[in-house]
Image (cartoon, rainbow over all chains, first blue to last red; front, side, top):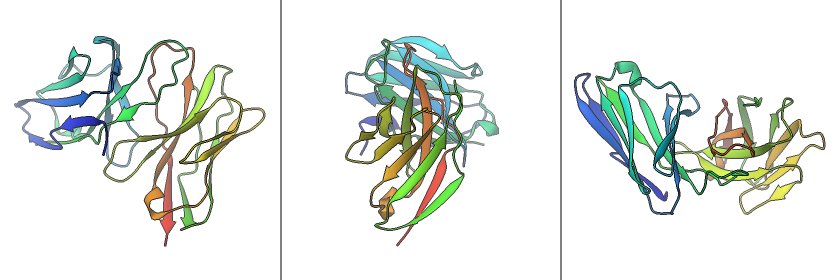
Length: 116
Length: 112
């Protein structure tokens, strides 16, 4: 079992749909992350939130819209996605974003997204 | 971020030790060496990290070369549950953001 909970586990959506992925952690972590993982590939960083503020956007298309409503929750809003956006979306959190930060990332088990 | 090079795949028999190598010849003085693994149908899981000295924890050992240009993750007795993709990642300790950039990793197969 993981301490980072992602819902839903699976999601199928059409290209005109709007949906949201949710991530929750109760470890008191103040950094949260979204990663995208295509089949047989390593995870790719999408966004980093630090103290509920967006710190890094790795040039992700605007059809992906992250939101961090509080320190425990992270959402990823999806709109007008393409079939090539089908992937496993992973959420992670870590303890701090201060200097000398080597706090490990804790990952959820992801949402398997299929865009039809 | 500095790059790492790992073999695409390795195999082991159950209950035997496994040595997973990682080359990082462009490592900087501020980079920590982190290892994560990803079991099938799960998110990545932290294994161990180190800077210069060898490190041990309940999951594994990390042996770091004296020049820090390579490291080896050691699983002392492989189990079937250790079959996973193992990622060696360099993480800048001077960064205020704890982001990780994953390379391709090593797929470890464990035979019964």
